[in-house]
Amino acid sequence: MHAQPGDFLVVESPVTGITRRNGEIVGLHHEDGTPPYDVRWSDTGEITLVFPGPDAHVRHLHPDEAAAGAPIRSGPAAAGRARAGSSAARPGDVGRRLARARQRQGISLEEAARRARMSPQYLAYLEERPSDPGVATLLRLADALGTTLVELQGGHQDLPYGQGQALLHPRLQDLGQEECRALLSTHGVGHVALTTAEGPAVFPVNYEMVDDTFLFRTSPEAAPAAAAGAEVAFEVDHIDDATSQGWSVLAVGRAEAVTDPATVRRLDERAHSDPWVGGSRTLWVRVHPARLTGRRITSADH
Image (cartoon, rainbow, N blue to C red; front, side, top):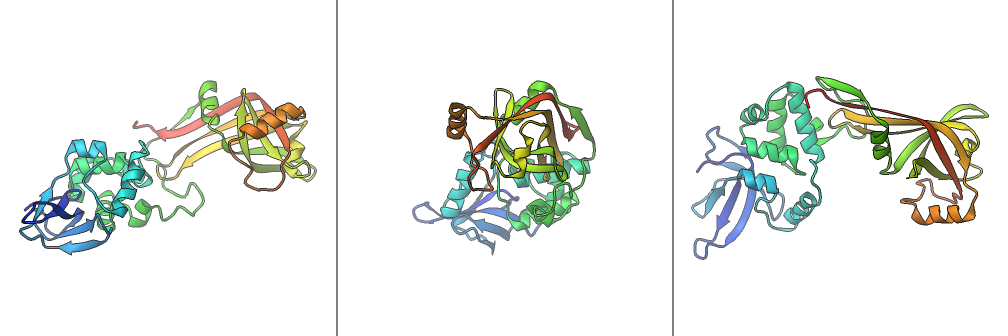
């Protein structure tokens, strides 16, 4: 019997051939792939050291299974992971951190897989799909990629953005008007900068984008209400610390209070989210951008 991390150990009934239990092989104890194995069981999520008996066999992870993101799994824990994987087409945080660490080392996927003693197909699966590899697999990958288990698990998430290592070959590019608008149209949280009686100030606000203008709600007595009737800067950004990439868009223009009752009612009805600060926020402020600029940091290798 030979296996590699990412394969599945299947235990069947010797009489009926029905699968009684299966689990992902997350660690090897011999370089040639012979038993014993560290197996994360699909029904419990626990990792145990297993010496397979005659009723067990290895099911290898094939490329088509990796692409589909649907290796054999069962049990409540596995069902939850399967639902999470099927609902998203983008890589998960672990996958993006793995890809970033590998790119920082300047090595191919095949070389990284060789160092970690796993198949390239399985490593590609981890990088490209939402996944939840076990600690043994992450430790092996951390050693192969010259990083730490904490970094791959995202243990630094509570730290301020920008604490991670920079890309090996970063590229800073200016964004065009259309791309800036496309990034902003998803709505979310932005920062409005204005001059108050106490000096310059910046406030985070939930915003909407309607007809190329930015709108946010505030209280007439709150500090952001001073934006109405003044020239302000409105900034939105997205920082991906897992990959040391991100973008920012800056709009500069005059702000005005929305006073038409019908427009206010329509904005209230169509708002994607309530202001996070809570309370009564009855004043809508609209920013008309006279200047719109943006920049993006990506890897020059892609």
